[in-house]
Image 1 (tube, one colour):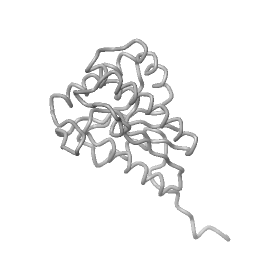
Image 2 (cartoon, rainbow, N blue to C red):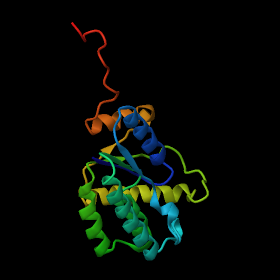
Image 3 (cartoon, rainbow, N blue to C red):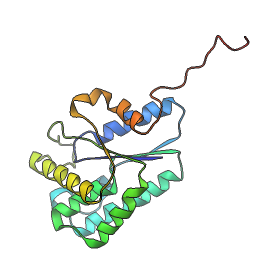
Length: 187
């Protein structure tokens, strides 16, 4: 099973990945995380990104997801190819070759969860802190979701404390580890 959190930068996708993974690990599930590859990009990102940078990011994302699916039953991605593509579209418009890649690869996710903007992004050494840029990317992600007709679930901002449960319910996984009945054994 491959789950991806989609949304603009600074919305809490990485934190949510760790929270969901921790819950699943407590259920003795084999989990791999695919963390945001843009942070490792050797080219400019954010508003200064280039076609070359986005090609590197998209292909590195796909490669990381392929490697993770070979290692674990559940893969959790803190981005998908679609929201990575939104940064390219913001800078250079839609690109037919990458439209095809995104359209094909988006079907590889068993579940997509759209993480909403709750607050402006904070500086972390790499992230763009412009609320306008954050909002522009969020709108582009919504446009792309619609254009590729990607099935996804939207997490509700007012339910932040319940997002992990909402994600687990959304993919049909138990909320808690099974309880062993210590008293019925031997009866």
